[in-house]
Image (tube, rainbow, N blue to C red):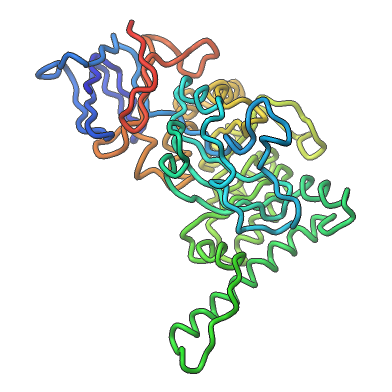
Length: 390
């Protein structure tokens, strides 16, 4: 398919092609050019001078794992039978027929990370997936990392049950214990593989097996934390075990932005347009994303769907603009930045030849972050999910 007469924002180093065209083939971006294409096939799309962007990416959601309109029956987000469960996989709890996937597609959100919840010190494996499909296995981009949680959520869950952890100290200790066990397990496995005559393999441990990619830095450690002190705890643990870390929420990140920047840790900011619904969110400020960005922290904006419905991801970025972020930086928080933070920038997040054809088109002079805006064309992996002519 050919899209022509478009203002192409590649999100690749700030390149903008004022009058450009883009061609897709077999689900990929096959070519990008400027001016009038040599030929215009019958099924081509005239953008009428509108903005052509990569599809938006929501870097932290519970999409499909907390289903719309259901209570316990559709909530598979938190397994609270054990506070440390890295062996859980979000992919096993996601219903791709949840109507919120369609709402995401219709608003130009072509990919998202769906995560276990924050009731446990370790909640399980996070995945990045496309928002179009009927089987999660086919929608999967990759497993991106393990979800950890600091602060009030684990405290409240297990305090109500009179079980550990009920303090921040215990939450951190559980995380350290689990990772240290994995480190020992990995050492014993290495010993066995290098000298099977003198060493026996350790007894199979699914928790340790699930954490091994974390120690190899093949997957990332995603730390849910709001308060500045919890952010620093996440940094402390990450340095102890040499983890490739991402901060989720980072509500009080502006208080320690220079420290986060010093450690080169990205932050997934959000939800941005929610209330201060619990004590550890009393420091919520619209300026947070801009303050982090000004210190050089790589940021993305998230909805934490279902906290904020996923279709309001662009509006969340617009709110961050009100808080001081520039429009261009806000676009980056929904495209290239989340792609790089999630480790999927080889597939999506920018418009480049060879990448998946995850694209959206808006009318001329329309702000894609505005509440009233909707894309006129949406493609995910080359499949047209929405198409409206001028």
